[in-house]
Length: 156
Image 1: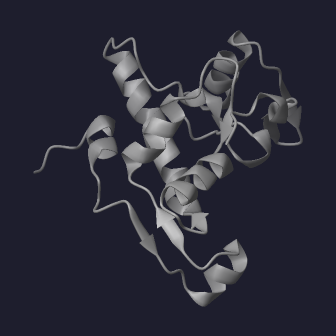
Image 2: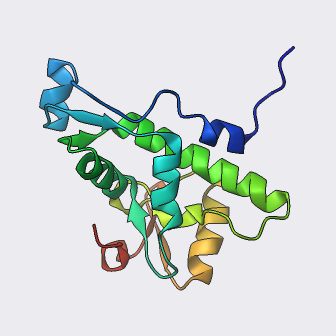
């Protein structure tokens, strides 16, 4: 039986990425673009790792950076979302192993400033980290968002 890959190993697997693809017609209409950049996991991690204390980034902002880097109309929403999740789990794995310099994944939010329940430790852990950095997290219905997150977004 094959040994299960660590989160870090999964993050380092390029999967023949990045690449630019032409989405199917219905996807082009939905996402409003003729070309789509599909990043490697490490590209997404590198963007997340550069968010300084006091600043935030959303997955949409990561998608814009990926698209611009690869001269595409859009960044892939599916892989960018999956790779932020992968990066978060790799960082938690590294922290548990005693590493001090990790990707501070809690600064990466979902669309609309929403916290990501799929990150390690769920909403409670991300909320704790964000509040320790001076952000205010509020509940709106079932969602938790960073209040006035737009004021803290990293410049694109």
